[in-house]
Image (tube, rainbow, N blue to C red):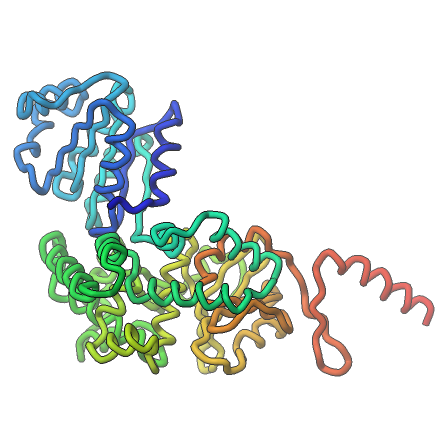
Length: 478
């Protein structure tokens, strides 16, 4: 059973571009890179030449006579004469690139030659990718794959694109969902949170119709990840890297989710673990959310690199890392008690990363003012709050109303409620998080104007000039 992926569309567009270059597909282990590439290759080429450097070590020497196309093709054919190289109708797939990063040096030659299409893929590329990039700069296209996002999960469940598109239409129109709609989307969303998007986990769930075996498979994926860390982490202590990876769920469960080194080891120091964290981020095993010095535009250069939070890029793997009792509570009762805030926060982080949105948060020193995420339009910074309860959003209200934060005029709150808007705060159900980037294209800037009563009016920006003119006229009469 093949699971439809967004990468399918990208690969077709890549092939149809007459000027396309060799492609490098990056991504964490077991997110579906090889399966997606092979599905595409078999449908679009007469000849598929696939080489897995991790499993077929004999191919590691194919560049020993040079990095030009003729030498590489000659050596591949010598090792396996059954492989066909038909100009214009052949794709060469170099899989597990991390086991032979030197092959990237051939990409320039393949790009200039143009007779064969080339796709490379790999995981845990980390420092090797810097070498790969420098050896093929200007001669390749990069693409990053993740595990299935919520939309891809809905495809697998059989939902049509027009049905899924209605979620965005509700958001753009600020039109609440019906009771039936919100009940169905919430149920699917919770199933997705439990499963995550690792293709093998989702496939088993679809084929069996239940969660049977999914937890064991998720935990095996985590163990495989740790094994690969020990295999590919060069120049660093793999035990420390694994310790950081294992500490993320417990750190997210804390009230203060800022990553703390002493939570990894009692006497840990940042200098001992910074390289380990960078390695995990480069490998796609965790994602980082850095604290802003101040919530204002531009965001570039405004991040405090010493303060950050770490999330798992697949919420299902985070759920699998919890204790057995929490697992049962979530799967059977749809409840995770005190931990559910961190669970939904991780999902939003995951959804943002899979949409290509950056992650940043703000925590004011010596204050309770804190906001989980920020997104932006061209001229406006938008705080995004993730709520696990129906308490008032004090920090979000402060950021919107205070004159100290001039780039912020409205905010978004994600939680267990319907679509609505009040006092500059737009509310969406959790499952809408996967549509935020598209929603921002429909964003209408507005400002909160104070009234004498202490209340606030939410005024669209397009109305401000007319309002200002009427105010000036009124003042002239007085």
